[in-house]
Image 1 (cartoon, helix red, strand yellow):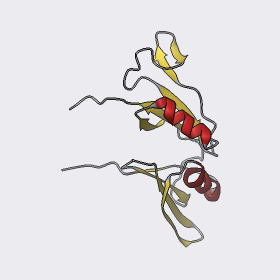
Image 2 (spheres, helix red, strand yellow; image 1 turned 180 degrees about the vertical axis):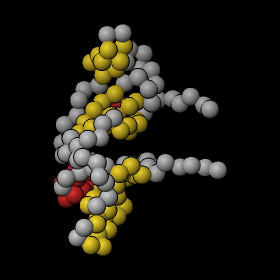
Image 3 (cartoon, one colour; image 1 turned 120 degrees about the horizontal axis):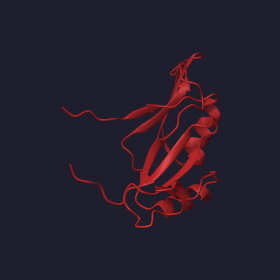
Length: 139
């Protein structure tokens, strides 16, 4: 039996601002914008190359807007990812990694898979981590 993880619901306060950020600024595919009533609306977007999507809207989450932290996007080249995000006008951090002193600015010294990160937030303050994975451990 396969259990595919496909959607994360992200809490937002302004659906139009979130839609503009995720679809227009980030350039994620707008999969659907479904609003059968004034009290229920679902917008779903998908990052390029991802099998999982993000949904937000009205009447779909009881979580506080801006309360999500640490959702991961995975890329093979963290520097290219940062350049693309910054080029799209996203306020993105520089690369960082975790070492003996904790969070440290810069690329992981050995560019170890799972070792280097970036961070950015959406208009509500939900925080995304971008993680460099340039080789996966086979299971």
